[in-house]
Length: 61
Image (cartoon, rainbow, N blue to C red; front, side, top):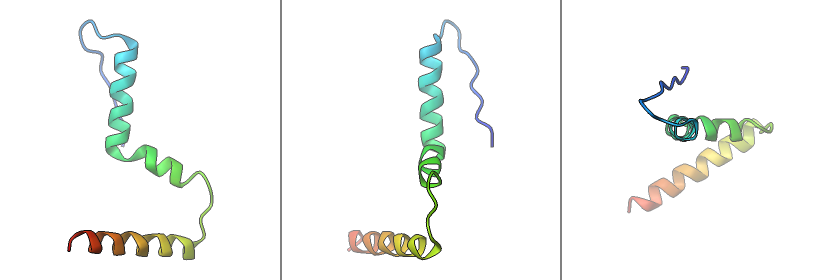
């Protein structure tokens, strides 16, 4: 699951870094890293998932 970036012709390092960050965001790596930064009890994880599903079902109405 490695993200690889190839330099395009005349592309600066800043532009490559911007593309890399965008790909990481698209793959969900940044969210995953933030979520795993601190330990979360299984009960808290279930509670968060339940709140998310309730919000999702409410927004569909």
